[in-house]
Length: 117
Image: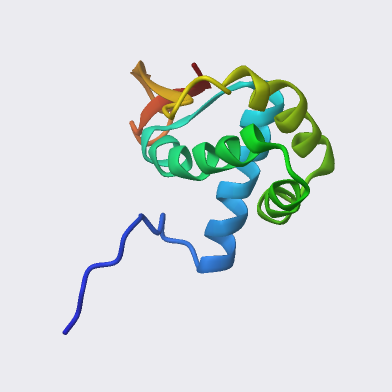
């Protein structure tokens, strides 16, 4: 039986899609607010929220898991030093997606901001 797969493909292969999400997550951690398409922002949300949950515990194991998923030492340091402690009392929902009214330049794609709460 063919079951539907979870998540969007963005018409990319697996490694390209993984690199896209990783790059968006790195930018979000370093800038704390980025502008992207609405679909990419919604796909990024569960990925980044899991990383923030790891950063709340601040153990060596969680730091290594985050390093393998994010792949950037500077972003991991900021995630564990500033962003993780900010949400110790919060149980979830660390990011918000804000839809923009203007459309994309070429293809009228829906744009959105994704930012930490």
